[in-house]
Amino acid sequence: MKYAEISHFSHPKHNLKYDYTEKPFKCDGCNEVGIGSRYRCSSDHQSCDFDLHAHCALPSATITHPFYKKCKFQFLAKPPGNERRYCNACQKDVSGFVYHCRACGFDLHPCCAMLPMVLDDGETKLFLYRKVSSSCHRCGKKGRSWSYRSSCKKYNLHVACVREMLVENWRELYKGQSGKRIEGKSLALKNTLEHHHRSSSKGKVQKCCEIAGMAVQFVISAVLGDPTALIAGVVGSLISRG
Image (cartoon, rainbow, N blue to C red; front, side):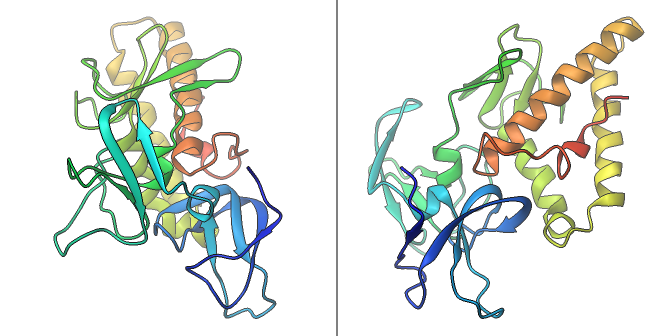
């Protein structure tokens, strides 16, 4: 459910208004990068720069997840205990809002907990798996974290790898200075894809890279907290289709 304006325990001084942005922002709840739907401080004070993912602004008190059928995840404002904790979906540190299962000790970033089980734009369909046996197009390795895999089972991308691309570039994205480093990542990923399919003909390699490129864009927008985010001009350049 979407509200135009809300009050939130993490920012009691001012209300938060619903907003949509195609520029990356840092969520002040989970401390992860975001794009698309957010709740932003309604104050006119420039010093009050406060944003929350929609998932962080309107969390459920408890959730379940099909990957962990015996678990009941509780929303917490900060990770429990003093030990370093990581998200079981993307393998990255948890430093803010989190869904935590007290019985099993599992943790999920709010956006990771809400990752769609299926991403479908009408042409390309990607399914979320807890584990897959095929190698990732980004790192070339198997296992590691949750993955999105195409229905044809030829294209696989770790959620952790997408998170790494975002973490490596979030400062440039956040400040609107994405050009040079993003292009470098685009080239690196393009080379990875071509190496992964070096036995195919040139035409098949290009088609494969185009489909995998679209897949990455879908997964990036989902990890950022908004599967519907129009991000081609911001992080779509992570992929080169040329």
